[in-house]
Image (cartoon, rainbow, N blue to C red):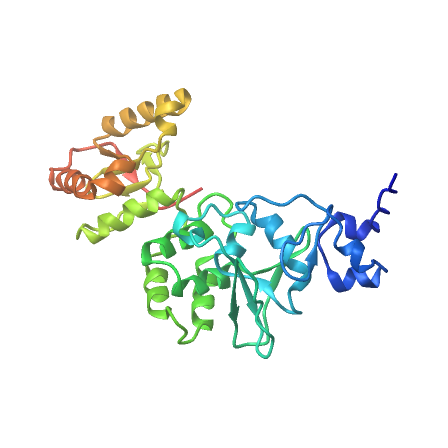
Length: 317
C-alpha cells in the first residue's frame, strides 16, 4: 500500500507559493506535481481550493507569489478588493489588473492585464493576506482610459459618498493632476467635474446625470429640508430648494421592505404638507425611459411654488 505523501510545510499549506519557494523548502519535482496541488498559473502551486472566478481576493492571492517587487493591484481590481460596489462595466473583462514600476517586467499570465506606471513612487494599502493595492484615488484615476464617463462619475461618487466617506474630492483632484496627460485624461477630467460628494447610491448618481444632460438645473444632493421651527422634515435624494421640488430614486427595497415603504409615505406626506412636489423615479425611468423622468421633473419645476412654512438648508449630517 503506497504511503501517503508527506504534509507540506505550514507556510506552503496555507497559501499559494512559487515553485522556487517550494524548492527552497526541499520539495522534489515529484512533490510539486502531486495531484493535491493545483497550478493557478505558471510557476505557482497551491494546496488551497480553486477560487470561483468572482472571488477576486482568492484570485489575487493566487497571483501574489509571481508579482515583482513594487507591483500593486490597480484599476477596478484595487477598488473591488477594497470592497467598493462597482458598476458592472468596470469588472466586465474579468481580469486582474496589476501595475508595475518602470524597468520592471510586466506580469504575463492568463486572466491578468498588466500596466506600467511612469513613476517609481507609489503609495499602497496592504489588505489582510497581504495584498498590495493601489490607493483608491489613484486607482480611480487610472480608470479614465477604460470606463465610459458615467461609470467614472459613479465610482467617484462612491469614493466620496455620504455615509463614512473614505476619500475626498480633493484627493480625487490630486490623483487626476498626477496623471498628467495620460490616456483617457480628458474623460477623467470631465468625470471629476461631475463628481458630487454625499451621494447614497449609483442610481441616484445616474439620475442626477440624466437630469443635467436634459438641460435642467443641477439639483442639490441629500440636502436637508427643515420646517420653520428647525425640525428636519426630510432629506431628498435630489432637490430644488427655490422651486420646492424633491426628486427621489426608489430602488426595489422601497417596494419590498415594509418599514422603508412606510417611511417613504410619511416623508412624502410631510414634504407635500409644506408645499413641496415629489417626483419619484425607478430603475425603468433612469435606464429605460429617461425622457419620461425628465419630463416629470421639468413639469414639476415649471409649476408655481405654493407658500410654505419651511426653508431649505444646505447639506448637513
